Image 1 (spheres, rainbow, N blue to C red):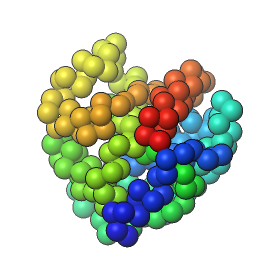
Image 2: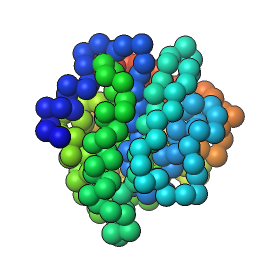
Image 3: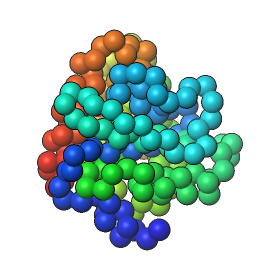
Length: 199
């Protein structure tokens, strides 16, 4: 798929369905985030995702199509070609008109290697993808009282570089606390503003 195909699927106006594509390395919490957003168990946990999975739901008056994708591996444990192919396929599964990418990054770990992998795998979608990407930090309980800005500063340049590419758009969720639905409402408010500003 050529780079131009990505922008063809990210149109200027949001249709009746907002597409949320979950991207990230293995064990980042993508499936858990999908369930958190939809408010119910829809994605398989504890089993490696090998193919994109799409699920629909109404959340805070917004019709969502959430697409979970296979995670990449930093240690060669996932088939890189297959992961790239599925990342490209995820764009086809999401509704045309309004697609936003959630780059799922666990709070408890990030390295220079993570940064390189993110650029490599998101790179298959072309440079335009960064304009439609929000970094979603998972496992927020691991912050242990620190705020996310302190965490970002501590992790240094590799993480800060990725955030700059996303125009410093980020949000934190605690996957272990699905009953706290305010975190999803806050996330959706950010995504609505993103879709308005990128449209």
